[in-house]
Structure formats: structure tokens, C-alpha cells
Length: 119
Length: 448
Image (cartoon, rainbow over all chains, first blue to last red):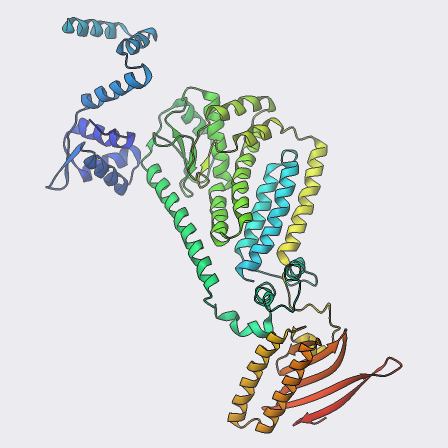
């Protein structure tokens, strides 16, 4: 993903990731209920997403389809975080997370699993 | 009153306030300055004037245009001193001089620039997301405001701000420390005070004044200082809500949130802005003791009275300081005193044009028109020789008073009598014992 998505755009993407493909009207309704954006605002953000190639517009009724997945965005954001804050060192990020000592038993178990899969 | 007059009056007032502010900003309550700037803005925006017997602005006008004889100064003089005699006809018709066009373009450009800034801001702010934060929610619960208040977050701003009048929203940047309860409360309280005081609207007023008076550098100074003082007054109020000991932590919060932004951020109430230093100093020095408070009160009163007087006074052409009032009739009309040859010529042409029309309508004889022209030319010669001539225009007609060194030597009166123009001319002669004798020199269609 080349272009960064702002919070407002991520919110729209989130709605699509949760509910699958939706028409612009439906997205507006959901967001109006959730965060109080008026229709024009939502449409503007959707158009921005389309310009950034995050959403594809399909013609019956302005149907919106997400072109990127949540994992993609998460991976990109993590990459950016590692580069910006941890000088490109993923170990540092990992160590920092562990140091916070907030991992529950289930989380540790899951991590063990992932490490196991990589090996 | 026209824009230039208002601008000059405003400039003088701004200069005074700037000096006072430079000398004693930290000894006086900052709200005082906001009030003063507000009064000046009113003067700059609303073209009212109450003629008073004395008027500082006319003194300035005369100081600016020292010699009334130079033809160069008279167009400026015409702008500075309203002349009902000649200017009456033009008063309603706005002349499209090149100066007016330039002013109009400048004002329009600035208006468009402000509108663009507001619009851009509005677009960025409306996509903000609501906050879910316990500190915020608890704080919100304690607030009482008639209008619905909301707190949002945005990843596109760098420092907290407030927007919206009917539905105010406090916008917090994502980069803030959400867990620092004290800092959060300071920020929220600060923005709340802006909302309560309607500072957003006030900033609009200053922006409007700037658009109208863009050519006046002092108004730019006022714009910058007024916005700063709004922030200072807000800081003052926040610190008053909390104890004096919290001042240092508030100051630290300001430093912590400092953001270097170079674009015009004076349009929205930003939490920390340029002149952070001024704010910190103001905060740390804000031990306003009783004596300073009294001093502040007295200065406030003096400044407000002074400014109101200046606000009200206007260059009034009803200034009879030089010429003694010649008769009751003179004081009921409009006076043009000490007319320059150019002014008299212009007035004369007007009168002759009217009279020529009357000749065509049969109300005036050609002979009398010629006599009138003769009189005017004679008067013109006298003016060129240095006599002081005043023209008094009344409802019925006008009178020309010719004097030298304060006394009136001769009079001419022309007025409409029963639909016909009658003229009378007098001569005033001084006897040796100092008394004056008025003798009628000629009359026409007037019974004496």
C-alpha cells in the first residue's frame, strides 16, 4: 500500500471489513448512527478512499468494495512503526511489547504457537 | 464617515493601546485588552459618528495637511474633513475612484483568503472521530452548556482546538497523552472557556475589521495582538479556576503541547500558539495584588472613557472656531469656511449652473445672472488675494461671508423668495470707535 490512510478513511474501511461490500448509502447510514457524520461527509471520505485505491466503486447503486484487507493495513502500519520508532528493528518492538508485561496467559500461548509455526 | 476616516481614528486608538500594553501587559488583567480591542474593532467596522464641539480627528487632519492653500492637500482634506457643502451631492453616489477599486480588491482578496482557511479547516474537522476516554467523559459530565458540546479526536491536527458555534466541538489531537488527567483537564477547561466566551465569533469580528482596513498596518498589529490577548485572557481564566500553585504545571503543559505551525492559525482558537513565551510569562507573573487591581481598574476606566470619546468625535464641519458666528441663520445651515480658490470655483460653477437653469425656466433674468457671475468673480479675486470667505448654505439659499482677520467685511445673500431668486448684499464698515455699521449695497427682488 503506497498511500497512507487517515483515521477517517480507516473508519470507512473498517465498516467494509466488518460488513463486507456495502453501498455508499448504507455506509452513510451506519456511520451516521455510530459517529454522527452527515451524508456529505461520508461520501467525501469514500471518494478519498477510491482515489487512494482502497475502495472500488461498482456501479449498481454505488457499491463499495474494499480493495485492501485489514491485515494489509496492519502490516503496513507495523512496518511504519518499526521503521519510525524502533529504527527498523523488529526485535526492539517485540522486546518493548514483552517488557510491558501485560500479556495474558492465552496471549503467551498464542505467541508460542506462532513461533512454533514459523520454525 | 468613510473608511479612511474610521481607519485613522482606529489607528490612533490602536497606537495608544499598543503602548499601554507594551508597558503594563503583565500588571493588568488581560481581559481588559480584549475589551479594548473589541471597542476599537467596533469603531473600525461601524461608520457612526457623533459630532462633538471638539474633535481630535480634525486636529490630526489639519496637522496632516498643514497649508490649506496647496492644491495637493485639498483632495486629502476633502476625504478627511466632511464638507457637506460640496460633498453633499456626492455623498449618496459612491465615486468609483481608482483608490476605491484598489481598496475593494484588497478587501475581497483578504475575505477570500479567510474564507478559504475557514473552509479548509471545516473540511478537516468534520471528519473527526468521537472519543472514548474516561477522563473526557467524566469531564464532560461536569459541564453545563446550553448548546450541545462534544469532544472529538483527529489525526490531522497538531494542537487542540475548538470549532462550531451552534454545536461546539473540542477537537483533540491524536498525539496527546490521553492518560495525563491533569493535562487533559487543563486543555478541556481552556477550550471550554473559549466556547463560553464566544471567542470564535470575536475572532471573526477582528478578521472582518482586518478585511476592511487591510491597508492600515496598525490594524494588522491589532489583529495579531488581539488574537494573542484572547488566548492570554483564556489562560488567566483557567488558572483562576484552579489554584495558583497549579500555575507551574499549567505552564509546563503548555510547553509540552507546543507545536510549531507556520500557517495562519489565528482563525481557530488553538491551545498553544506563537508567543508561547508571552503566555508563560503572563501566567507566572499573574500575582495580581490588590494595588495592581485598583491601578488596573483606574487605567481601564480611563482608557475606556478616552476611547469612547475618540470613538464618538468626528471631524465635524460645524466648527466655528475660526469665524465668529455671524447670525442665527448661519448656524442653522451648513458652513464651508475659509474656502480655497479651487473650492470656491467649484461651488461657483454649481451655483451658476443652477442659476442658468433658472434663467431658462424664466425665474431669473439674464441681467441678474450676469450680476451674480460678477459678484462671484469678485469674491474669487478676493479669495485669491487672501481674504477668508465662508459659504453658508441654508434651506432657502446661501450666504457668502467675506472677512479678513476674523471680522466680516461683506455679505452676500441669495435665497429663493416665492419661487424667485432674490439677492442682497451688505457691507460692514468699522467706525473709528470700533462699532460696525451694516449698509445695504444692493437688492434685487427683495423688499427690505
